[in-house]
Each structure stands twice: as structure tokens, then as C-alpha cells.
Image (cartoon, rainbow, N blue to C red):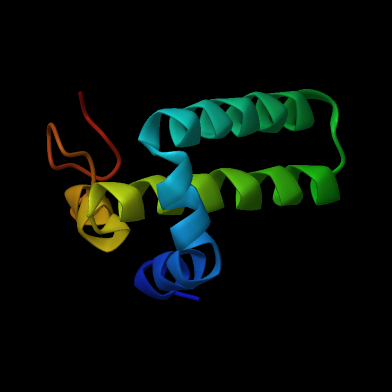
Length: 92
């Protein structure tokens, strides 16, 4: 699945509920999921790590939708490599 399709799927699935919740609570949920990902990265199984990566991506997609921004456009910042030095791998 590409980034834009994923963002559209998350918006269709959770968009109305997440919009009612608001951006501040969405950021809080995202932070909680990042914490769970950190724990899974340290001590979890690959399946747990994959699960938590999916949750983090879903909350990022929800936040982007609430902000009216495109994750696809955000990812373009890194399309040519490092956005600072434009090298791949990064030279800075």
C-alpha cells in the first residue's frame, strides 16, 4: 500500500472519530504508541514490533489528515536523500 492510499484508508476508517477527538489528544495517542514501539523495539518480538510500527503509522496518518496535510508530500522531503545535504547516504 502506498502512503497516500494508507492515509485515505485511515481517514475513511477513523477520520470522523479522530476529528471529534481533536489534534491534541491525537498527538497524545501518537506519543503513547511511540512509547509502545520503543518498548517493543527493545524487548518485543518481530510481530510485536511490526504491530507497534503499524499503530504509529496509523496515528501519524490520522494527525496528518486532521491537519489537512499529505503524508506523501511530507515524505517527499526525503526523496533525494538527506534534506540538509541532499546526499545518500547523508554526509552531514
